[in-house]
Length: 336
Image: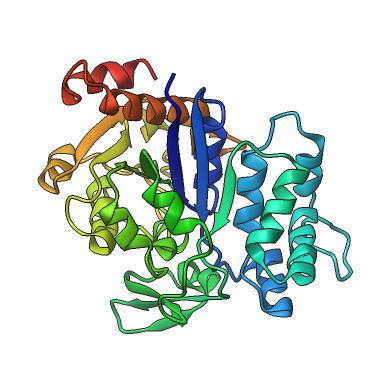
């Protein structure tokens, strides 16, 4: 079986879900490019104290790439409670921060931390430059700081990083250039996915790539960030960064599957993302429907294993010379 090189891009909770599923695929060489602009929680405190990029999403991705029965991965995720200076910090964040302070390189710190777990695949910070995510809203308001953007609860017009276009971390552009597939992971659209595309060279590398380029659309809208968004709205925001037709395949959940999870008692809460397939096609992407939803801890999530299998099958069928790709889409989706 030919090894396929897959690069996942994102952050937050969505990218680890994708990685955990892809990690189990046979013949998969896996890399993750991870947003590091979070200014909230333990990551934000460490970033401010040590003038370093935020490492919380990197930690979650390293854990997702580790063996499911890895005891040290559980320790990495332990969050201190009970007050005091360690309250709210996770062990993994502190380990990475210590390695960063000792080595002066986030890339080297992540490499060593990944060996401790160990991981199948590698996690790469999108940039090693400490960056602040900023947003301007349609009412003209400007907010700085990732954690404040969603909390503002306004319609986002544009996001950018300060400093603008920070350089990509070592290995990031090379991973994209050598990929057989680039998967834009689900998660917070403006605050987890888009920040990666604002790093110098990343969007251009994706445009130049000959890889299969896939967007995994969110299952539910995110209050304060993507209220009222359809699947095509998510695609359109990504295409504004990358260019039209760069995303080739837009993976969406089967249209009626999540509706039973929408809470009529929470009119301002998350809603199922409308799967407007015809509009997706009009944006030059092929919609790929599959049953991907699961519920974990009261939250709606992509089913990690089903999503991973679907992505690997999409890549392998696309690269096959035995049959036209589009004619096999339904079979790929139904067997994922």
